[in-house]
Length: 410
Image (cartoon, rainbow, N blue to C red; front, side):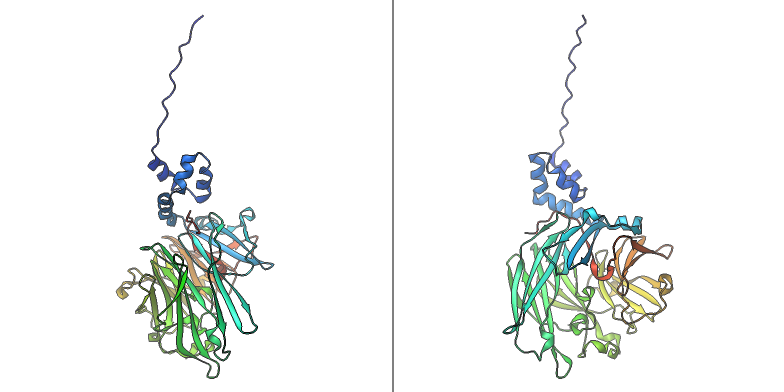
């Protein structure tokens, strides 16, 4: 009987932790969370703040969109990557991936930073005085974890005559140097008797690391949405690299119906608040913006740059990009789109068009007067309507871009 010699066992392959971390950091959050169950070592590695930051730095390569809608007074949310939308404009939302926010029947989305969405809540009682309680929660749509109540505060209105000073607007931002999340709350005073804005504003900042509110200097100019000219979420301010930015007006003391009284583009300005120093700066708009548009323009952030878009002569949509933040000479025309390409001949007061996302070839646009979005091919100048076959989505107000992350909500 022949004896078969034992074959030597293969030598185990050793993979250093830093290489494992590098490989895992390219994966989506769902896959990474599954790998936490491999062993204790991987669980520790994935939970390490260094790995979380490594993954976060790669996340902008695969931006996502969170779609919100209200069904029977309960919000549903589904996140999905932009590349899926670009590959197939006729999409069906994955109902198995819906995240019901059943405990939060009424909220507003303030903004997103580092994969966290900041949600705003309020509750008002009217006796003996009108008092509104405000608070916030962080929600990570990738890990589906929600924070406790944050920034709880009460405001009482004693003088009903000053009606515009009741309600705050909010914008969410992040200071990289101190790793601090902040919310800016702001409101402006209106005098009901004179039906004019007084020009007096109140601005407060909530720092999540210190869990406290503080008053800061009032606005040097008043943002459009505080004047009632723009009251949709996309006018409430945008965050970019530790600053929050608003489109504002100089010397405008009229209520919302008086947008037509704006006679000069020189009245428009960008007001920026540095979240680290809590000081303001003002920027001029591009020189090519030379006529007051029929509908209010919009400030946005695309490709990590401040962008400015507006209607031109009721014939086309124009988009500019500030390539170097704060440098007026860096304003560059990014694109212009004829309304004929989107089959729109009538531009009315409720018409709004904004860009949700842009890469080198395509852009996704939403419209304020319609529950649909379009994908614009910038090379061929062709538009495709996005069809969500199983849901009616308000893309303009109910969609928010974000990046996947493992960042904790606490």
